[in-house]
Image 1 (tube, rainbow, N blue to C red):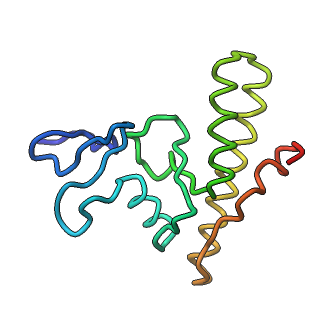
Image 2: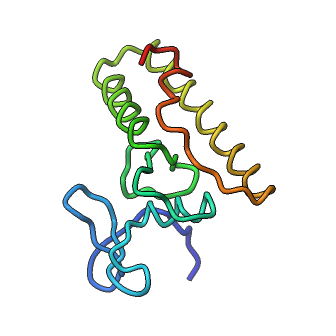
Length: 141
């Protein structure tokens, strides 16, 4: 039976995943047991395991959407900053500021994609430069 395959996690009996208390899907069986699905996908995307200092940002805020184009690997400083900014813009509902933020994040996603492509073509592992996004956005650290 045909159907559209989604990249949205489900949990429950027989699914091989469960959601933790924060809503992140985690593998419950096999060689990837106890690993989070978004971290597995992000590692496959960048071609190496993530370091303990790297975090995965979900572009749409949906922790169960682990499609590769929804994920961005960030250092812990940048991830905290991006998550706080994203929440602030969603709360304030200032359309102009939200549009500027979305344009900046689109640029960052394209930068990430381009850097990953170069990394894969050259065989040089890609690593995040934590703490640089705030500078690129034009804020004082």
